[in-house]
Length: 72
Image (cartoon, rainbow, N blue to C red; front, side, top):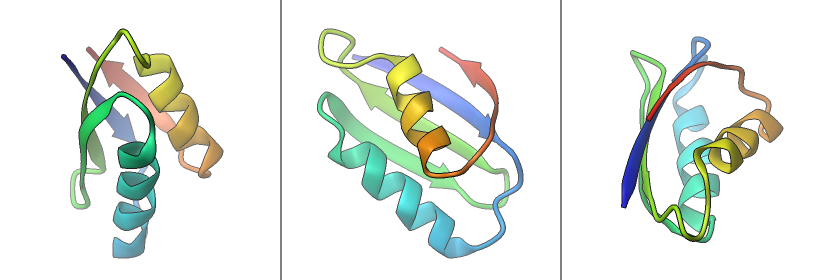
């Protein structure tokens, strides 16, 4: 398992959390994804044999959120 952290642009509402967490947690290979609203950070634990940090970032971007920085 690998853990990645994404720094997003400022999140504007608590419903953003649910939207991002739901999309990431449904993605194959993701064990757990959590969003911290006040710091606009996403932490995801996933199986690299099934998905990649780049695919997770793409999922976030497709939802309309800008990823500023990624740390694996």
